[in-house]
Amino acid sequence: MKSLKILVVVHESLMPPASTEGYTDQQIDEWRTEYDVITHLRAMGHDVRCLGVLDSLTALRSEIAEWKPDVVFNLLEEFNGVVTYDQHVVAFLELLEQPYTGCNPRGLLLSRDKPLSKQLLHYHRIPTPQFAVFPRGRVIRLPAKLRYPLFVKSATEDASLGIAQASVVETPEQLRDRIAFMHEQVKTDALVEDIDSNV
Picture: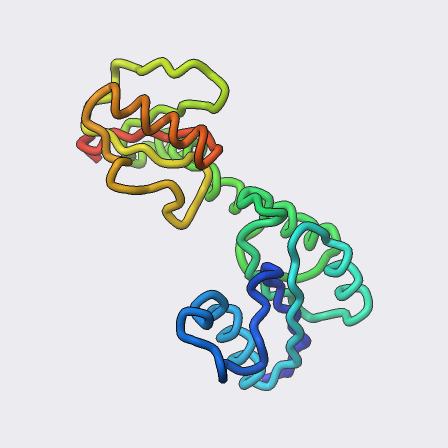
């Protein structure tokens, strides 16, 4: 196999050390994926560099221009603390005509926008639970079409952020409280699904 120049792009806080020696399992778990990817790529004979990205693409652009990697191995799941901005980093790579791993910007947009994904599934007659979206900054009006129990989650966050036992609601009062939690604490629109709908 040909040796490639691979630039691994990670969140700045997840830059792994050269070795796991001296770290606790809990510390290692924070950056285990990043460490494993880099270690395995190097073991396969590839020339690997790792770049931490937080809220600027300047270093990424410079690294690509100067080092000219064959591929960017993209492990970013957010940009500037916003999970829906990861699509813009990938769009930036496309503008640079830089090959990269993972999903393209359109796929990331669809995967991060749960209501849009559900609308697409519904359009193509793929069964999905009945749902309603409650945008931030608007008066909460409860639709009659949803039947309890309901499940409340963020319309855009991933990794179960904001999901707890209280996400399953049985009454209009619980529903209002959980939607307010999503708006105020998670700071996203709320997606509410009918748990018992025939899917």
